[in-house]
Length: 230
Image (tube, rainbow, N blue to C red; front, side, top):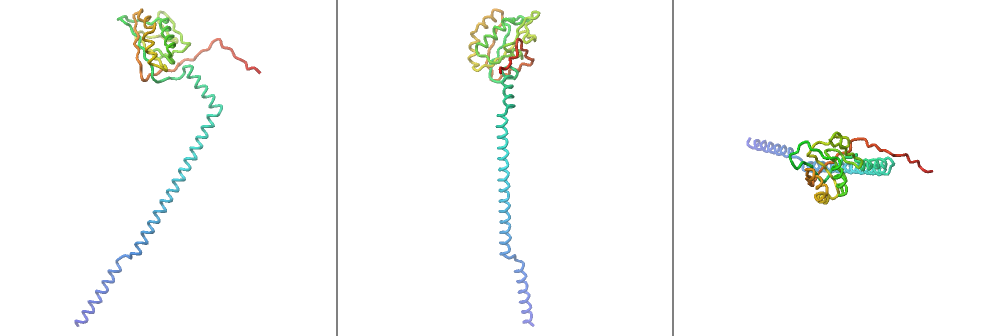
């Protein structure tokens, strides 16, 4: 009997060992799975790279088309006419200007109230500013052009047909050399003329000022149509 128990015990041990070994995964199977996953990952990366290159190629193609279209537009007659109109509008004062400039504040040198600037004195100041290199001017939000009229209507000065408020009054000027304009204005005749009428000019350079566009229809008189010679 003892031998039979030994044999049974041996058989049980052998079966248990076999079952334990069967539960352990095969190393070759593990390696095969890992290799397959690695290959799939590499293929996915290659596919993404190809799609990215294709996308970049399409982007470059579209950019080239846009550049070609812009070149064609610039060379077209329509574009040239549009540019010409924009340049004419800018020269005519129909566009807003912004940049470095000079701000001039005209105020009373005493406690006089309801004091107004005579049109002649204002025109004198504008003429001197033009001589000093002024390119764009405005008075209390009114764009000053070469055709601007300064008139006395009922004892009140009007600019471009609009009433000029009482002092203080602000002017804004843009020029290529703002410092030079400021220095010349300080020693100008206008300083003396305004002083004679109990007014003073405060001049200071500003980093950023805005000159509004002329907001009225410009009327041209004494113009004739020029017929083209054949």
